[in-house]
Image 1 (cartoon, rainbow, N blue to C red):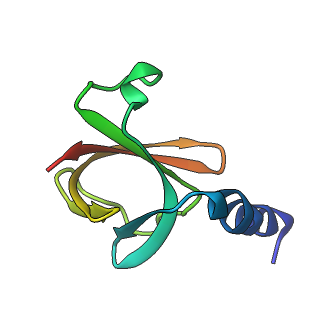
Image 2 (image 1 turned 120 degrees about the horizontal axis):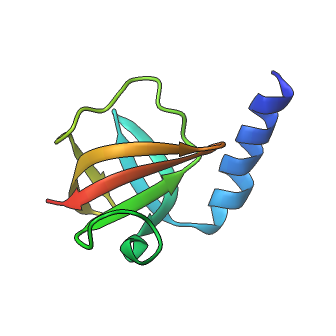
Amino acid sequence: MSLSDDLNADLANVFFADFNDTAVIKGAEVVGFLDVNAYQWADIDSNQHIFITAFPMAEPLNRGDKLTIAGQSYKYVTKRQHGSLLHVILAKN
């Protein structure tokens, strides 16, 4: 395992352990933070939310794919990579 892999694992296991939002992305359960007020700081529409995670997406999502986060249904809009963090931009379904 490389240093980068170790740091990403630490980020996922330590930092995101404080968050309890769980998403199902491509069949994998992913822990992160669902920011429902992200429109206040991010360049997104006010009806969009951002799910922030350290999960690396091996398979691409397609616009309109359905995701379940914290028991709610969302449609995938796009994603933005910020270093080791992945911002998944969603619209409420």
